[in-house]
Amino acid sequence: MKSTVTKLADFKDYLKDFKVDFQLDEIKLNDEFKAILIKNKIVETVGKIENGDIVTVNLKSDYNKFQKENLRIVVGSQYFSKNLEESLVGLHLGAEKLLKVDGHEVNVKIIDIKRNKLPELSDELIKKENIDGVNTISDYKKMFYQKTKESYIMDEVIKLSINIFHYLQENSEFIIYDEDVEESLEEMMNYYRGAAKTAGFELETMTSEQLMEISNAKSYEALITSEKNISTSLVKISAICAKVLNKDIKELEVNRNNVLKLQIEFTDYLKSLLKI
Amino acid sequence: MAISYLDNNWKEEIKEGLWLVDFFSETCGPCKILSKHLETLDFEFPVINIGKVNLTKYQEIGNELEVRAVPTIFFMKDGELLERHVGLLSVKQLKEKASKYLYE
View 1 (cartoon, one colour):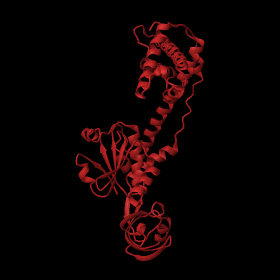
View 2: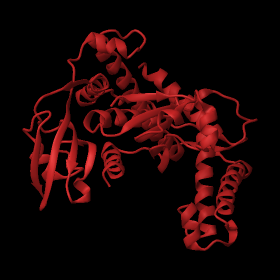
View 3: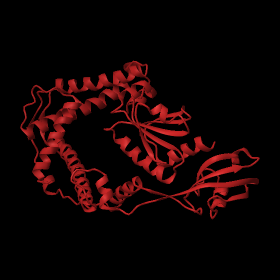
View 4: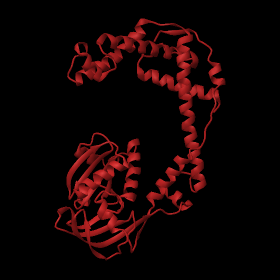
C-alpha cells in the first residue's frame, strides 16, 4: 500500500479523558453461582405433592389425553394440564383418586414424587468446577471480577479506538492512491459477486429487491459508491495505523483482514498508552 | 433425570424413550450457552432424557450425521428422529418442544 498520512492530528485529549468506571455485576455473578448449584442439584423422593414437584402418574380415563402410564409431569408447569396439575397438589405417594378434569373423569395413581433442591454454595462445589487456581468461593469471586473487568476494559478501549479513528480520518492529512482504494474495492465487489452467484444472479443485473437481499444498496451504482467510501476509509485507517505504530506497510495488500489486524495492533498500543 | 455424555455407542444408549441429544464442539460459544440452558431444563423440567455428544472428540459421528454447524439438537423417540434443530434454543423453547413430544 502506497497511501500515507502526511500530517497526523493530535489525539492525546482522547486518552486524557479515558476513565475506567467498572463495577462488579452482582446479578451476573449470582447467575454463575446459580448455574453451579443447578449442576449439583439434590433430588429427593418426597411423600406429598407440592407445586414444582416432578410426579410420575398412571392415568385412566375414557379421554385419550388422560389415558397414560408412567407419565412424568412437573406440577404447576401447565405443560400437560393446568387443571389436572392443580388437583395433584396435596396428594400422597401411592395414593389413588378419581378426579374430574376438564369435564372428564380421570383415575390418578401417584407412582413417584421427586423434588429438586439446590445445595448450599460451598468451596467443595467451586473446586468441582476444575478452574485453575480457583478453589474457594472467594477465589471464584476474584476470578469473575478480573475476567469481567478485563472484558469491560477491552470493550471501552475498542470504543475509544473507533472514536479516535473517526477523529483522525476527519482531521489528519493524507495522500491517498486510487490503486489502494481500488484494491480494497475489488475485494468487496468480489465478495458481492460471490453472494449474488450463490443466490443465482449476476451482480451487475440484479434488481433493487434482489440486491437488498445481499447488501444495503438499492442499485449496483449505489453499492459501488458505498463500498468505495468504505474502501477509502479502510485505506485511511491502514495509513493511520502505520503512522502511529511506525510500521512499513508498503508491501501490505489492502483487504479487510489486514486492516482488522492493524486495528487490533492499534488497540493494543492504545491500551499500553493508557497503562491499564 | 441426569444429563448423559454419549460416545460412539450413542444410538444404543438412546434407543428407548424420549431424548434430546445435543451435538456440540468444545470451542463453540453458543454450545456453552446451550449447555447452561440444558442444565436449567434438567432442573426445572426433567421430563426428557438429555444426552450430549462431543463432536470435537467424536468427529466421525458428526460426519455420519452431516452436522454442518453446532450446536445441533436432535429430538428422538425410541431411536427415531422427530426433529433436527440447528442453533441455540432458550429454556422456554426447550420446555415447549419437550412437552410437545412427550404429551401430544
